[in-house]
Length: 355
Image (cartoon, helix red, strand yellow):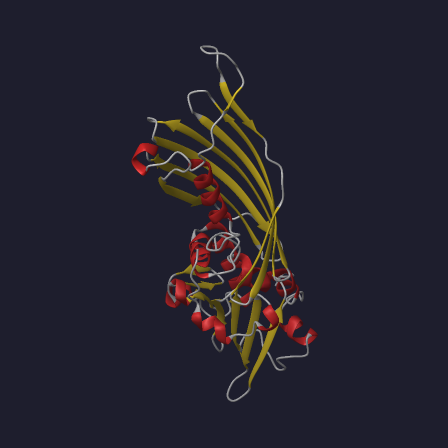
């Protein structure tokens, strides 16, 4: 087995597209103490009653990969002084990963070279033998002597790289993990894209008169706000800090049309894991009449975290409607009443390698 091979398989599909939820209840029984995001439990059965179990916790995904720095499982187990008597041909292995609350398993049965990879809550499962991967153990099995477990692990890695299984799993992780940098919490990429589009669509500020005189008045509004935003909250016992520089440029024409261009840059910490995020968003506001405005917008964002083994890109398309009631209806000139709603579609792309 190549260096990090087993560890890479454990986490190759665990990078990204992570919405609000937190199913993955089974993973809660695995170790993730002290606010750490990763728990790993390995059980080895060498036959009969010779069963050994070890549990480990890690601050980030890189530490988890480094756990498997040996050239084989035998070498790794020997290096950590655990799982004595492990045989790479006959011993059974059950590796269970708690990835931010989502359970992923990799298993070898006694005397079997077929590797089962599953995310039970996501209803995803695949079996890989030396000859390749299939949806059933029978289809993936090969006769004895035609390959090794190393070959099965390489087959799984190739399958995850070439197929859509990884994207399906990460789409589920985006739904299930409350600490995902992709979706489902205030700091996530999907949330900030939607929030920025909505903010541009409900902007009721007006321009300034720069022309002077009747008939020659031109109203325009250039805006380049500069500042830093900081947010802190706790989600499922994990502390999240968010630092954002919201670079933005806005321009308004005399007839009320507006364009907003935003380039927000963010640095986020989830426990000890660091995440970097950048986006580009364009929104155009077009008045339908004095009361009603429509704002279509497009957005694109990138997010990467070495510690979370996460990297992805997200695109969004939105349409915001803003209706402001005539002041004569609400009976006052000092305040106004508006109603707004927005529809948004986001699309997560293929995974970006950060390992």
